Image 1 (cartoon, one colour):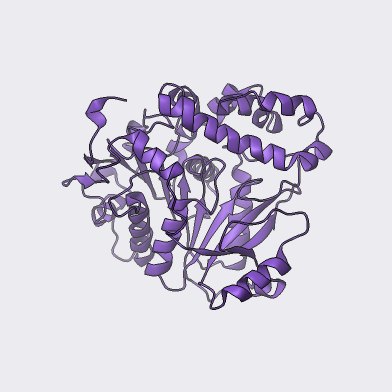
Image 2: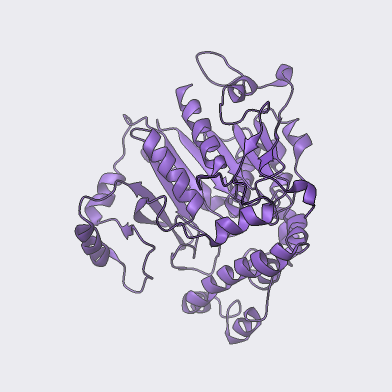
Length: 419
């Protein structure tokens, strides 16, 4: 990494279409998307963005996120719902709930509701009771409060520090909003119940969940935020929705640290010490653990996909592309990992996005490609890219330990809800 990208102050660059080509938002004030972005106080291109001076490059910013102890911060509480897909698989929906008055009662319900054979959950998370689920999913045409839907990073989930920070900020600054994290198949201690796993092109997994929300609550706005791999899934989904011309499920979106070119990202992560020896093996370990923890279920559905021979191979791999070549592409009909990357790269669908979308990327990111689709953002009037020189991957850590990108996303959705 170049020493020129060391420091704790960075320029904030905005990439949008010229105002003459800007799209008009559906609002009383007839404001354009460009004009709307100019009202956001958290992104000011005339000022420097100040980050934690001790985390003076992208690697340190990223490693702080992946290795620092944030167990005493961002103390969000979740109620978990199992969502069943049409193909028999499941994801888990972690809904943000109020801090319980009695932790003893919370723990008691936790023990009573944990499904047999399912793994224990992360701290401050429990399954909803049957009565709670009935109340949660009661249809309503009167409720017009927004829902913020969060998509997590590769192998992550609702327990990630940035996601908890984001949920905490939304919870504190809104009234009546719901916040929910979609934990992908096998992630965040969600069981795998079919042979299908998640991948960057698994847009139907998002679509089924959001369609169910719209059918129950047709008058609620849906805001979506995707982080890292979740940003890739979300961008692909938004591009498909725009291409199909279907009734929009999402009113506004924010994507942070998106790997726009998955092939370039696969090479990029192995071209630095941080990526090759720390991030890559760490992510591969997460993915391998999903297979190991769900071996019986996957093997019962498809013994050719996962068996003892495959498990031996999994012990030897060190990179995510090796995992995807061995496992992911075989669950999604791709010939090899790089065909999967080529066909699933969000840059292929970016020009089809017709949802107002805020994009945040740093070009000192050690985990994903730094060749950003700037020209596409200057062509598609529904996009605004915020580019910085510092911030790392899911970093943007400020001196107080909070994440700047979280504040930007929160203000973006807050202002959008006012239109």
